[in-house]
Image 1 (cartoon, rainbow, N blue to C red):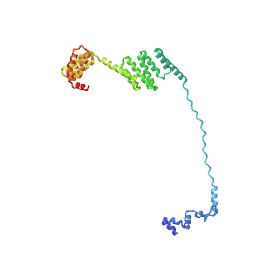
Image 2 (cartoon, one colour):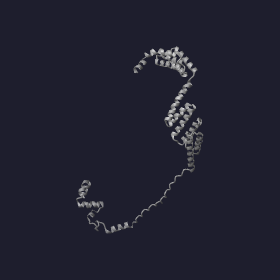
Image 3 (spheres, helix red, strand yellow):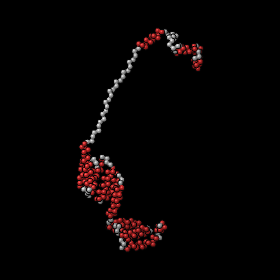
Image 4 (tube, one colour):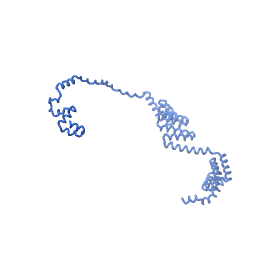
Length: 332
């Protein structure tokens, strides 16, 4: 008891207790373990102290009488699913396939007629192709080309516009859309509507940029610039602007007179008086190279106009002494 109390007070002494066989037995009793069972031989019938054979038999009978729990029932397996039959792809509508083939045949016939310049036959073939199968806008663009060659530009424009509208709805190739827009630009150019021609050429280039349409745009822009210049010509307004420039020149407003003479030249480029008057104003502003250029331009316009030659002669010596002229000679 004294050893147990010592272990209770100092648990570190428990390790040394296992060296005493009596302490091992006491610890086994306290824990309910038969410590002597480890020393018995295997198969021995010796029972621990205090245990009777009747107790073992009654305990084993209680275990035997307890019914064993039935095994859990297996869940019913669902029947195997039948094989899924893949739906077969529906064949293309025979009527549509037939219509498409007939339309392609008409397109081919129209192309041959177009190359042979049988435009009426080509027009009928392309129109029939579109009626048979209205899903390919090349039938319409080809029809527009026929209208263009026949000189029916309004029909060409309306057919191209229809092709563009139908093409947008079916997401047609942007190159075909660009071609239709370019053909509209060409039709407007033939009609003389240069503003709309430029507009549709530019639209075509936004869809698809090609050298052909780019060259056509540059050509029509030059035509439009020349046409605008011709449309701006007005002899009466030219005389009015020149007289206004003369008044400003007399008032020593040489900058204002240059602007007025420039307007007079735009209104009538064939009048040498506006050039010579502007040359005189440039001389007052000591813009001698510009003055000489206007004097030479006046001679080109009318060689018989005496003032032009006089201005050119008078400008010769001062221009040679002009710093800009000296710089040009040194650069050369």
